[in-house]
Length: 96
Image 1 (cartoon, rainbow, N blue to C red):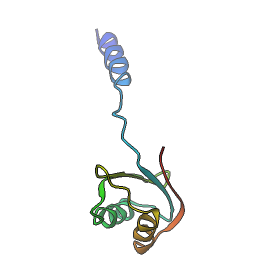
Image 2 (image 1 turned 120 degrees about the vertical axis):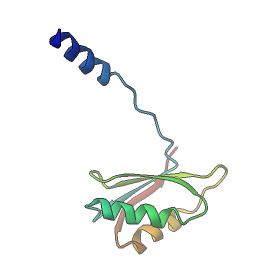
Image 3 (image 1 turned 180 degrees about the vertical axis):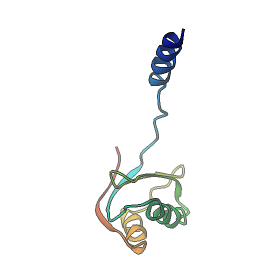
Image 4 (image 1 turned 120 degrees about the horizontal axis):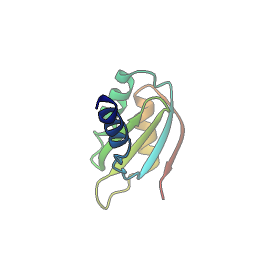
C-alpha cells in the first residue's frame, strides 16, 4: 500500500504543468548572487510605471520583465535600472 501511494504521489506531482509566463523582455545580469540582490532589482524595476511583473531566475542571472498592456519601455530604461541597482547587464532584448 505504501508503495502504491509513493507511485501515485511521484507521478501525480511530476505531471503538474507550470504556468507559462509572458516574457516581454529578458535582461541577463552579472553579479546577482543572493535573494537580496534579486529583491533589489525587482524593487527598482517595479518603480517603472510601464512594468507589470518582474520574474527573476537567480541561478541563471536572468530577469524576465512583463510590461503593462500596450506599453514597451526602451531597453535603455531597463538596463539603467539594473545598473543603478549595482549590477552589470550582459544582454537585454525584447522577446518575440
